[in-house]
Structure formats: C-alpha cells, structure tokens
Image (cartoon, rainbow, N blue to C red; front, side, top):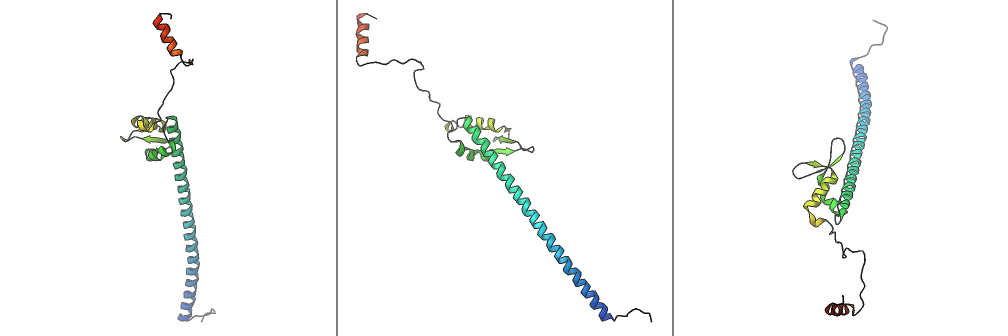
Length: 155
C-alpha cells in the first residue's frame, strides 16, 4: 500500500461537493458584481441619453424663438412649441427645418417660409403719420380764414 492517505468514496464526494459549493458561492458574488456594474453602466447610458435629448430640445427651441422673433412673429415662445416637431438634427449635429414635402432648410429659412405661409402669425407693421417730418399746428379759426382768403383770391 502506498504511503499516501486513502479516502473512501464518501469522503471524496464530500470534498468535491464542498469545493463545488465554494466555487459556486464565489461565482455568485462575481455574477452579482457583474450584474450590478452592468446595471450602473446602463443607468449612466440612459442618463447621458436623457441629457443629450434635453440639450437638443433646448437648442431647437432657442433657435426657433430667435428665428421667429427675427421674422416678426406675434408670440415667438408660444409659436416655437408649435414648430418644434419640424426641427430635426442632421447626422453631423446641425439643426434643420423639415418642410411638409420633406425638403430640409436652415431653421431660419424654414421659419421664414412658415411665417410667409401663415401671415396671421406675424405682427402687423403699421406705420402712422403723414410721412412728413414737419407738422403744422392749427389754431381755432385758421381753416375758416384760409377758406375766406381762397374765396377772395388772396392766396
């Protein structure tokens, strides 16, 4: 018989079972850590995506409001909300205005086009006055006197 210790089949089974359990426990911790890291990573990806969407939405609104104000729109902030869906982001990150026919223009040109098609949305450009820099001030009776002079041929 060799000098080494001999084990019965039950002892071998117990040793193997104990080592298998230790490995499973170690792997469960590793799997749990991996799952936790994966969840954190996915949460961060979602957060970055949400922040990008929020920034893009703010940039779209800012560009629309500016273009609407330059075009003389009645309420640029409110109208920007109406037109938000027409503003798209190109692959290179630039903003464009998509017309109903699919054509993409700059946001400024798209807004000009929209305002031209919707004149009700533009402030009225009323200019008052006679267009003469000098004004005439009349006193009571001046008109009557002018009519009398004209009638008498004194003008």
